[in-house]
Image (cartoon, rainbow, N blue to C red):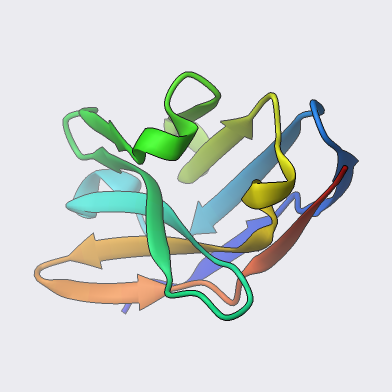
Length: 115
């Protein structure tokens, strides 16, 4: 199992930006895909963005054009840059790693966007 440690959540006003980081315990090239999910109170966990080993990315429609997922290979870290944040982006954000068909999850980091 991959150990994942998230950082970078916090409180921001609508229209602001935040940067989330997820550090993996192993070389991220050995991970098939990494991504960020979020779960708002009373709602199901949903995919926000993912990045595959070869660099292909996928985004939820609700964040396209505002969020960008990338990798810092030297630090085995996946980064989620979030711009133009909206109150509806408020949620706990979880880092995910899928390797050999198995999912690993971080503990989550809270993002709160005030109106």
